[in-house]
Image (cartoon, rainbow, N blue to C red):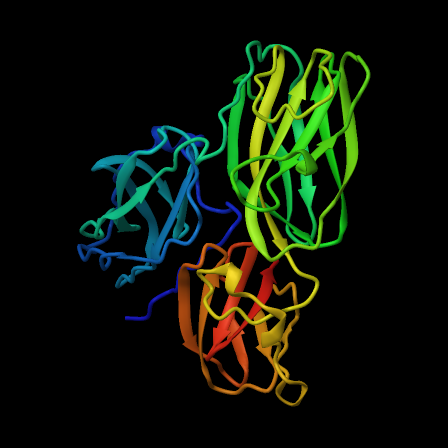
Length: 369
């Protein structure tokens, strides 16, 4: 049986969420008339799950099943209860989840005759706590200024549309990338009267938004939809993945750091930022980004490069042939392994995001477009 490799990454794309019409679908498809097909598809095998969970979003995947005629889709179950159907081997859930809660998901393959396979082995996933060590924050009156759209990022961009009415929203499942010492423009469309717009990025990853990690974009009072823009300069820091907080307040406030201060009227949202260096470096242990060091650069005579970068389908590794490789996400979790074919690795199944490919003791960063 040939298996279709499921790979996923930092940014949540693909799959079908519960926000779709999954609730209106029947668990079992109607059987096709005039067919004697009674052979069910093979049982789906649980695949590697690499997307970092958030407090309200989970994504998981599995290896494709096979069938004597053809697989038409997969039924998905949460804690034994049918929740929807997809034709993909990636499933994203954005609703019906609680923070710090473990769920077990199973999958059944189905064919055109309505035959269902047995359930896959359970895939256990746990949502995170909302603030994960950061100070809590909300709005006392979220009916004031509202986020309509927020954009940020470099090679990997986030363009998030939000009309939520809650005082705080966890968007840490969305990950945008920025390079060190680069200048990036952030823009946000907001609705109704607004006065203070602030962005906080925890550059040193110490769970505190310090005074040198604050970017203020002060605006004047206005009604209707208006786009606010501002530039953020990324300092020269080691490669890291960290939290960014966006705070919109509709009232005048004294100067200072308001990263943990509830807004009287407005909204707050947290995102994730991946910050990378201007050059590729060797990472001795992908699970420990602090092990990255300039002293371990590859000698010129055996220089290894990956291209194209960003890559869409096939990643080429120079001076390599059929060596074994491993691919890690930026959480340090291995999501794939294999052997190069004439110095190339097919990464077409990867979800957009930032990854490390490790060959022996050498690791190189690449971006999947």
